[in-house]
Amino acid sequence: MAKFNKYVQIENKPSMVPVGLEKAITAAAARDARIIAVLEDMGFPGMLWFKQHCPDRMIECGIAEQNAAVMAAGLAAEGFIPIINSFLFADIGRAYNQIRQSILVDRFNVKFIGREGAWGEPGISHNTVEGIGSTRVLPNLIILNPADAVEAEKAAEAMLQYVGPVLLRQESSPPPVKIFADNLPFDIGRAFSLKDGRDATIIATGYMLTEAVSALDILEKDGLDVGLLDMCTLKPLDDEVIVKVAAKTGAIVTVENGTVIGGLGDGVAAVLAENLPTPMVKIGIEDEFSQSGKMSPKDELKEHFGLRPEDIAVSVKECIAKKVKLNKKRK
Amino acid sequence: MTEKINCGKCDMLLYFGEEIKRRLYMRAIPSEKTVLGFYNNKCPRCGSRLTLKTVVIKTEGRKKYGA
Image: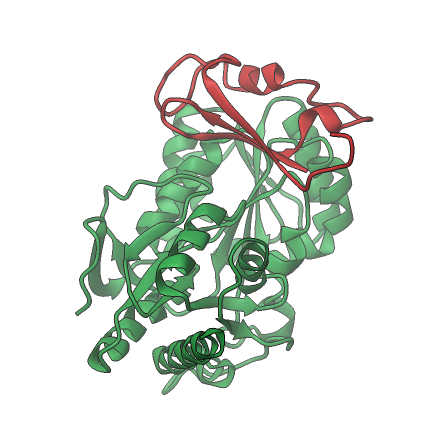
């Protein structure tokens, strides 16, 4: 197995993001009576666990996302810290204008937890893949996309400490493996380097970090020394580290369970285009909607969209080939 | 143009968003001091006192003619 830094503690057991969120949010809500849940008809996979801890601090708005957004703005204006939880297509997509006008313009302290990603049978309507692209363009919004339960707990803690609007993308995905040690340091806006490399760097976000870790094993067997960077904060991106790893390895592969247009890949490409043009390959959903797929005996969507470790390994090799070609041209 | 305000001691991000002084209308956040006030002038992570001298304020954007 590849040699990782000290805060990485990979265990081949499920490490579910909602578990980390529940831990952090219930602890924060116990300390801070301003935290209030605003739900949009979300029994599952919403925040019904919050009901056990704070039954008097939940507002169920039903399928009325625009109302929920404006209600959250009003609560925030009165000093509460509302957390809206729903599928991302609903809590952001259906209430895009209300969020922009009533929450983000005044930078109200509202938190969003939005579920999306290409996985399983909910299909084209519920498992959207456009969430990152459609929200990265909104000023004043921070976007987080944690990879496992540990990082989700740290990200949710940081989200509640920060005063301002934050979207935490809770990915619809197979169970990620445990990647991080419990004492992982977490900073909004800082990428986390799991492993340094020499030949190329993979920059992954959310669940795809699990697939990227497996890809490293394949690449190592092929004699390649590839670095891995976890980009939990999708806005603001950690420009400094992106440029640093690009300067070191000269080949960057981005990996996300979302559309590559406007997502992590485009964000990284924009940073490199302005600072250090570097050969890249963007792995993600390529200008398509998500769809329904069976999860067993094999994960149909992962295969369909090319999000398996083997697919990542192929792209890393493609990217290294681009780098070699470019270096020859420059000579 | 975006602006970031970080704690000068532990680097915690305290503000990320539009450059505060460039907001012409609807000035819900009139100054950096207001942002520090959101945190009661104390970093929630390291506990250090937040003043305009103890935080790091950075703005990002392209250069403009005459600036």
